Image (cartoon, rainbow, N blue to C red; front, side, top):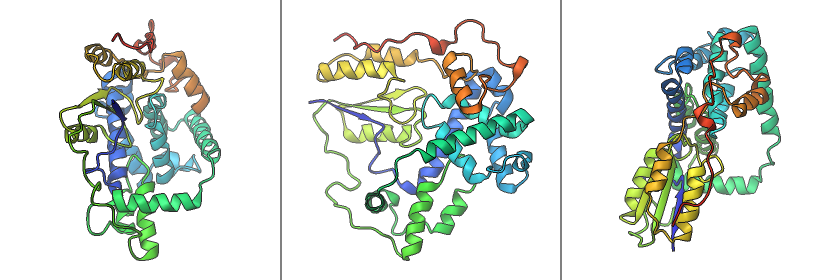
Length: 332
């Protein structure tokens, strides 16, 4: 009767060998958003958010001073950390302070970055073990349907070269490139042409497509194409500052709208939802809210998000990100 698609993959545009580059671009978008909405952030990482790029280049080239202070620091570790920092709206506020600490590398920065790395190692080790058979089958499906639109994918060495300086992990590309390299041929099957790289044929069902502006998995631009490909009954809504998966407690506007959309079978007006989205405040990049300070304490071992002491941002009055939202269904 009614459909909601949250962060969908565009069947005609999403090729997995581009994933690392896309994620890196979204990470740069996040840092640029930080500089654009926070003067303090702009002063620390540059108004064009250039410092993290310089830090990554220095890690790859072996010239970053902090390399001698942090035994775990290398390009792969920094890329994995960057991937975590764009995975959710909560983690977004940590991204610029993470790169700023790497660039400055004071004794307290080193101590706090060690806390961050240890926290990430603990989180990774706590993950459920991988079902090897299911992982292998999933890899074959992805290689066949999503890895490449060309006759042959990039080689493993080509992927290593292409992804060497990204602000993102290149794990998906390297994994599939490595499989092809090991077996000396693509491990694929022929997808069914009835659905491969096709949209549904102008469905009559009311459809809502939701995409976050900072979605590292299925980028916002792909949502625009997907909605257009589904035809006249599909509506696209862009969710400000959101990562992958906008239907969650971090998006009270979305929660309220989807409830009302489903209850009304897609007939409610959307003006109130659009107004709610337009009023969405930016993340607390300055570290003024209790939520940000608690997260900083958890990840860096200090409530001072930027580790600036007396030079920390002035938090006069409530930050706009703590304005109350109530996830009540919109009027039908």
